[in-house]
Length: 577
Picture (cartoon, helix red, strand yellow):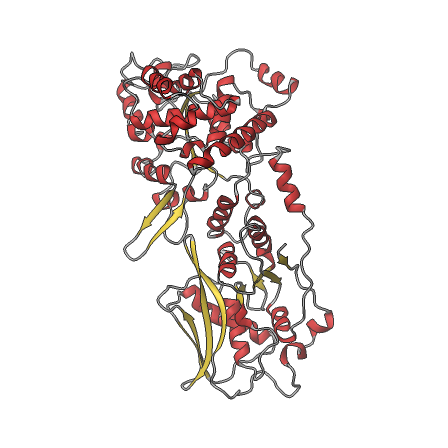
């Protein structure tokens, strides 16, 4: 159990007494005097670089020269401003910086320091420099990461999940943070309980509380884990009230048998999908609900997702803290940096790590953005290269895309007439290249709803929704595939290598080879064949079978791009080969 600590409550007398902050061990020693001795004071903060983070040593020392505070160590303007925030916060405690030159250094010096997380370390480093006797708590055994207001209040910072992991791997005693960052750090330590060593996490509201704790050495009460978070995860894992991050599930949607099977196959094997259909056939509705039947993320993926989201927000969504796979749906007019990321900030594809990236109106995205998806879909990461900086963001996502069949949307519809000329339809389709189509596992045609409209509502009111049943099927299929795939060194069916497909199928070699030759058309590429066999393996897992049936492969072939186009009747029009 981690030694997590609740917000520190100090007595009113202590908080109101300047002596609690100004005097330590000796009533005659006051801050603002001209201390003797030239030894530097050291505390630690941290710096994050994409998925990697490292300790930053913050040192302060008196030197000869004109009075003032000088910050060295390749810091950005945001970090430099932290020195003045620290000075203001110290003055509110009655700690006056003397008229001497103080140099504050950040090292390693070659790394560019950005962010406001250094504020707290600046303040504590300067405060310790101004006292003769060392504090009761050794500050260099802790990592300090918080922004300071001018009044000395602590504010949350980004990348706190990475900073907590840095404190653990660096062998420090603990980490000191703002109250608002505590839920995130608590979740990081709880998720990594089996693989991470224990550290102490202290959260405070003000600089004064931290300084009093350092001076007095008061042993603070340990946080007691009441198991609420674990109980919540257990409820989610068992499928009780599981929803997508948007609070949606399939209970309010009428699913055809094929769509229900496709959803469970996608969730069980984490296969990518492209939905085709006219407006109003439920493509977006389907995609926004698909994560509701996903199991919770595994430990490694959850920690990575927390680190990624921590890079863009001080407070993370409760659904992500609970381990629910994220769902990201960027607009089709987003830019390349917004989708793929930059060295400082992850893009939408990385923010969807461990979950679903939904690209609605797929052909309306810029052609270069669509083509940029090729490598991340294959290797599960994004390499962002700039002239002076190169980083790698994790991006193991399940891509779900949706598109109409023409610019007006009504091509092939039996309810409305398409007004697009053939050349315009061809131009629209060519925005999605063959290599991209080949990298998508499931190509699903969404049917138009016919009959009386009231049938939708009567069906939803008269029968229980399918979400709970679908979740249970996915959980069982995931467990079945996990046990089998352990021998192949992967977790999910989508990651199976071609050389493992024969063993994973459970078939005799002669039967396997004959079915592949008989069932796959000549137009199917090698990549498409391998992906279809992975889908077939997931279909069998959904059905509870360890050995593939011929029908499993036949269904997987029907979900290939070429077969889906033929089912829409596009071969006769020259829209498919």
